[in-house]
Image (cartoon, rainbow, N blue to C red; front, side, top):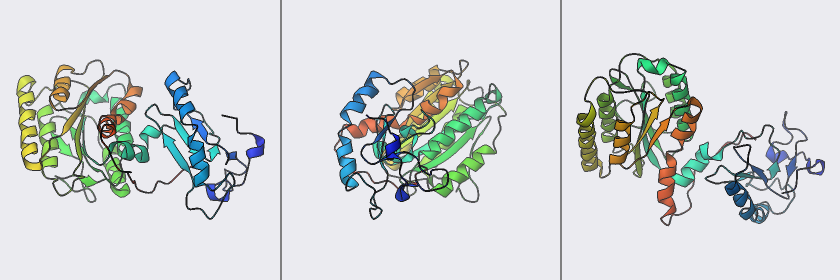
Length: 331
């Protein structure tokens, strides 16, 4: 890839190049720009950069050549890979390096993993007030919510001594909500009002999560179903150990009878103090994955990567083109 030089500076009216703050920036219609979410390019990212270079021919063809055509409805063109490699056409310089990860954008998640019903189950017990765990968990949940598209349905359950669903005037209770922009914003607002307190009741958390799914036969994507469960400790009230595992088994069987499909359970043990055995067993018994996260900065990426499981399933089957909702580009 050649460097974007001074000769590529254009005031591209169709690409924000004449807007305040973007005047006279580098925009290159002869090639795409290559970006990576990490500062050091791995061998895999380098290989992807090489074999995807031929995409520029398609980008340029879609643009009707290497000059701006304001009459075209096609504007920015994207390409993302599982490593986080991102290609943008026309090529535009990035103000700050390594700040964009396509894998956390709704257009990428929707296209790779398909429609989903998601229940986020987050530990809100008093121990989450330690070492910014609660703030980190909220940030991770917000990231997951922002990857949602119009094909998804979602609910949030927080639990301490008891479990409650975050719902209210806009978000209905006891069911999933359509992951529209307004609903996602409302869920984020509700989550920001919560604070850690009390004990930790895994039984109540899973019971409520499965009840929400059971009540959402009409409010559903009718495709993938997942529960994302995060805890930083151990259950200390409600069913424990094998009793808890058998309880969730029963909830899963009932959901399978009522909806014709069960839920994939993805579990996250957050902190070195967190229970590992029970969350790992839950994920193994219910076709999910378990992650042990000891550092706050890894939680956001680890939780948001749950969709890779469904992306793998899609990669093994013949699928049609996936259309997603219009994406407002910040560039």
